Amino acid sequence: QVQLVESGGGLVQAGGSLRLSCTASGRTFSSYAMGWFRQAPGKEREFVAAISRSGVFTYSTDAVKGRFAISRDNAKNTVYLQMNGLKPEDTAVYYCAAYSGVRGVATTRHEYDYWGQGTQVTVSS
Image (cartoon, rainbow, N blue to C red):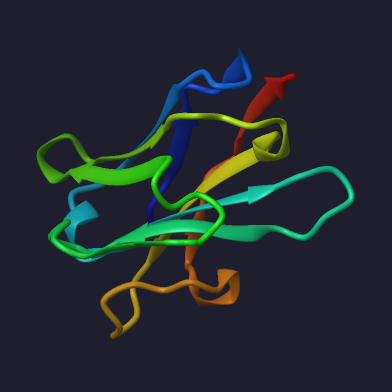
């Protein structure tokens, strides 16, 4: 069992930056690939970025490439999402998730085993 707790959300003006953190309980954090998803009001939860167990491989959706960066610190049981150049369309609840499957990373929500409670990110224009 893994418990995930996100933090770092908030209200920011367009063009600003935020860094989200997600801290996991337990001693097996490094055995999970991690991902970030987001869900805007009235929309389905969508993939944002993922990172492999070692942190060497990352992947992100085209909408955030060049603006968002995912990273992890296995010694701290934490995964991060650095968000720069924020746009109003980035407004959503952001969730982190843990993946235990055989692939290096996963990009669809049904593949993930554990989820955090989410943190709100609001970007004003």
